[in-house]
Length: 233
Ligand SMILES: [Zn+2]
Image (cartoon, rainbow, N blue to C red; front, side):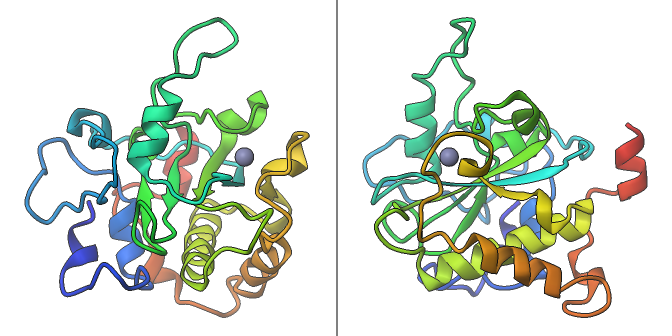
């Protein structure tokens, strides 16, 4: 999965622009747990088990929204969020399967600054557990950035990564600007924080429509299915 991401690439740097993103986002077959697979360094939490992180490839589901969150904490990683979310229960009292988001973007404290890591929910194309609103859990891709953006904005590396990721997702899945939402747009919460640059993000995505910007071919996912095919499933 993250094979191409770390080769020749220092972890202290921002996640490079495409073509790494398609590799990052493509579902990964079970068993490809080679030495190239990056495991986010964790400060004090146990790594998420491989059987949770690496699941069979699934066709893309019909995503309609991108929902942005912050962790409201100064540190965090996929592993630490996963551990915390395992303690949560849904309204029926059933424990969550683990981390409720589809992507986590690190801030250098728990995960490298600007690192984008997909979770098992993306790998398995599962609904999320992040919005607190059924429609947005079912059809919204949950992206969380580590940090508390009520206090300060995301780091430059995080801003660059979230822009790349959201642009990729929007172009690939034909999600438009109004469907890029902050958690607070759909529920009474301060998340993702007053300093999260939501409007800038929406404008950037709008400015890179199909008439210009980054070449679409660089963002074609390696899933072997087209958008049309994905929507038929
Ligand atoms: Zn949130």
